[in-house]
Amino acid sequence: MRVAAFLCLLAGLGSSPVALRAQSVGAITGQAQASLVARPETPAAGARDADVTIVEFLDYNCPYCKKTAPELRKLLGADHRVRVVIKEWPIFGDVSLYAAQSALAANWQGKFLVAHAALIASRADLEATSQVDSILRGVGVNVAQLSEDRKRHAASINASLARYANEARALGLKGTPGFVIGRQVVSTALDLTSLQHLVANARSTH
Image 1 (cartoon, helix red, strand yellow):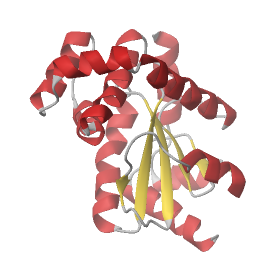
Image 2 (cartoon, one colour):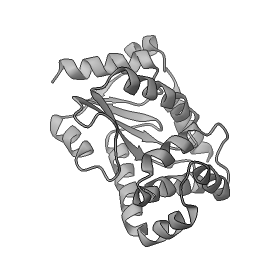
Image 3 (tube, helix red, strand yellow):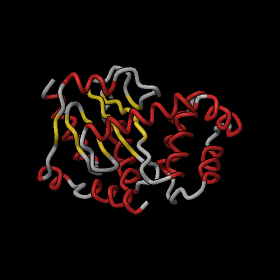
């Protein structure tokens, strides 16, 4: 847990636009970017016909992921040509893993984005599985069905999580949150200005 928290702290440093300019923004090939966004298991937020896709690797217990979430919502509200693909990377232990599995399982109810939004918006740390269930129940997720879907689709859910973790490590991400914006790789919390800057860069390299 302490190691994960330290990784989250490292990723969260330098979230201002000035720090963003100073830090190293990595790059991947077009082929690698296409592979990351091909056939996502869950619905993306934002535009279906987007010209820029943001991939976010997150943990529901990461404070910097929670800090960036409203900034992403502002971006999607202001820019209708962007979509966000969410990839859970639970590095904070068992409850983070349970939350990630639950969010993915909610997709069988057609409520992945609802579950994701509720969990990432939680102000309190997720310290018990019952707390995760309570949050999801509060936004209309059928928790009994969720439990069954977590079991029934466990192989698929865990395969997705393993793939996301492998992708994050291959990208060299230092912790959560981590982003791929177009072909740019950034491991830090981001504000709206930074997000808009990176989206503009992605468009200019199309």
